Length: 112
Length: 114
Image 1: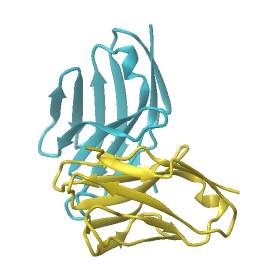
Image 2: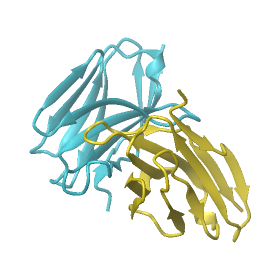
Image 3: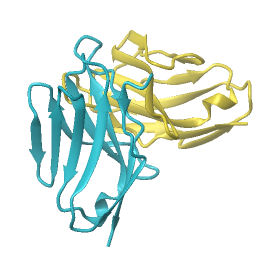
Image 4: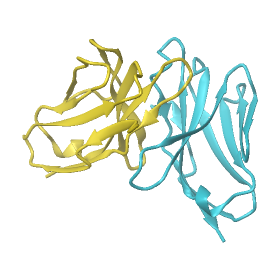
């Protein structure tokens, strides 16, 4: 039982490149989210999904795309990487209600 | 505007004593509050939560207090142990905005000294 798996763990991109951060869960949770963590800013919500086929924007969605074709997977796409997207990215899942989120171990992304 | 604020970036406490971490919020629609603990190179892990209908929730060494009139919550850890050294985030959500849209504070780094 892996929980929430994020790949890759580390990535360095050049400005303008695109990439996809992968998130997979085996807990059959309906809710999934992407957060970014920056020093002094806490965690900020990028996009979230309340079920397969349903996604919505969070607090800082610009420059990111998501899709949710299955319950298990929720990839985050950077279309054209910018240095401002240098951050640690966390995927999280929840079964809803007031159960809170289970977080993955994160992807550390550097854009140069 | 920061809806959830943790005004102390760091806190140092002696082992065995009480650790008190504070969190303030501005959005009166928040009705559920959570604390997460984060070690380096790991994702945050859920610690304890409280609903706005309560003013206290206990789980072992951890107690969360909620003062709705002051829009303030605190996490008490008694007694503090070296393994408690981590970054602690408070988070809040509201039923209206979607219970899964958590808003996090900036975090407080807690160091427990032997």
